[in-house]
Amino acid sequence: MVKVLLCGCNGRMGRAVHNMVSNEKEMEIVAGVDTYTETANPYPVFTNIMDVDVACDVVIDFSSSKTTDALLEFCTEAGISVVLCSTGLSDEQLKKVEEASKSIAILRSANMSLGVNLIIKLLSQASGVLTDAGFDVEIVEKHHKMKMDAPSGTALMLADAVNEACDNKFHYTYDRSQRREVREEDEIGISAVRGGSIVGDHDVIFAGQDEVITFSHTAYSRALFARGAVSAAYFLAGKEPGYYTMQDVIG
Image 1 (cartoon, rainbow, N blue to C red):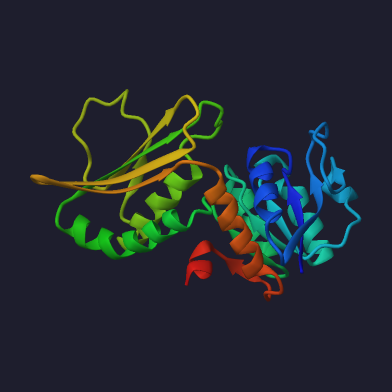
Image 2 (spheres, rainbow, N blue to C red; image 1 turned 120 degrees about the vertical axis):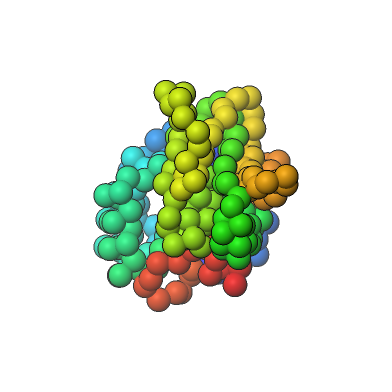
C-alpha cells in the first residue's frame, strides 16, 4: 500500500487527486496539507507541512511555489519521495529541487497529462526537421481566469522541448506589443489567454511556407492531471534518489 501525503489537498487539483485515490486499492491518502481547513477530510489536515507527524511513502504536491522550500526541507529530512506538480518555481527554487534530488527521489512536471508528455516526446523528434526546413514556432496556451502565472508551466515545457531538440538556438518572446519589426528567425513566440473555466489548452504551431503543422492538446477536466499524478506516485514509491520526469513514467 502506497501511503500519500497530499499537499494542497483542499484545492481544485487536490480534490481531484483525492477522488482519484479513493478508487485505488493499492494507495491511500494518510494526511493532507492546506491553509484552508474548512473542508471535511477523511484524514488529518495540517496547515504547516513541518507539523506533519503521519508516516507516508510519497508526497503529491499541488500547492504553490510559496510552499516549495518548506516542502523540500521536510521531505529531505524525512527521506520521503515527492511528486512535485507546483508551477511558477523560481530559478533558485529549481536549483534547490536539483540539490534535494541527490538525497530523495523527486519527480517534477509542470503537466501530469499522459497526452502532453507524449507530445513532448513527439516534439523532440519533429522540431529539428521542421525548423531546419524554415518553419517558425509559436505556442498559444489558454487557461481559466483564476490562473495567476503566465505563460503556463506547460507552455514553457513545450518550448523547452522544441529548443532542446534544436541545440537551444531559440529565445522566447512573450510580448510583441512594443515592437515594430518583423519576426526574428531564432525566436519562439509564447502567448497566454486567460478566461472563463478553460482547464487547459495548448497549441504548438509550426508555420512554414504554404503549410502549417500544429501539435494540440486540450484538457477537458482536471481528472487527467490527477490520474497522471497517481501514476507518478506509484512509479516514485521506493525509487532511489534522483530527478525524474513524466518521460520516465511513460517510458
